[in-house]
Image 1: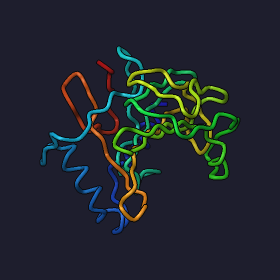
Image 2: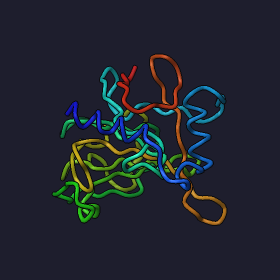
Image 3: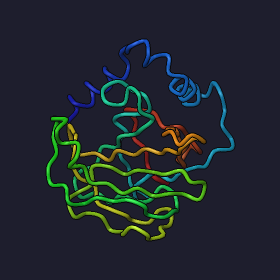
Image 4: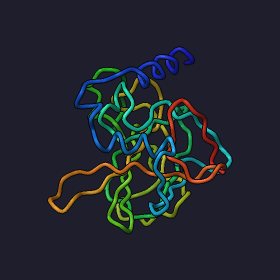
Amino acid sequence: MRFIVLILLFLALSSGSCVYMNNPLRRETHRLQSGKIMDTTSFIYDLPYPKGTTHTLVQGYFTQFTHKRRAALDFKMPVGSVVCAAREGLVVRLKENGHQGGIQKSNRPHANYVVIQHADSSRAGYWHLRQNGVLVQVGDSVKKGQPIAYSGNTGYTYFPHLHFIVWTFDRNGRFKQMPTRFRTKKGPKYLRAIRKYRNP
């Protein structure tokens, strides 16, 4: 597993294509992560696992590998780990009948997931869940920190992990990714890859 983490670190730090490097949201997100610009107004999310537990963020916002153009996070989690709602909201979509996963892109349709819509109409997606491991139903209202599923290894995955992403839609109905701040023991942070984060 250490070998996989080292590969991800190398890929995260290596340079990408011009389009990837010039993505304005990528540049802004990295400036927020480094503290070069400050954000004091966006919603602060809880980490998507139970309080008092720790997981490693193996892939972060706009890192190389599979997140070149994604404001998404991958938390390394053993299959069966509890996944919690990072923010309160309404369950609007889910899938839990997927039974396979692996490094072939043909596995993408088999990913199990839960999508929760928040009060500001943004949505959070929790991907690669265990088969029959979803604990909520479409239409359920969930609270921040509430267990919603068990992590798995379904879909397009290289190892068991939780893929977390937040998005909204602009006035023209176009998909818009939203990097998010999280509550940590050191205060609200934009998380960075290859670091362990404990849910305080």
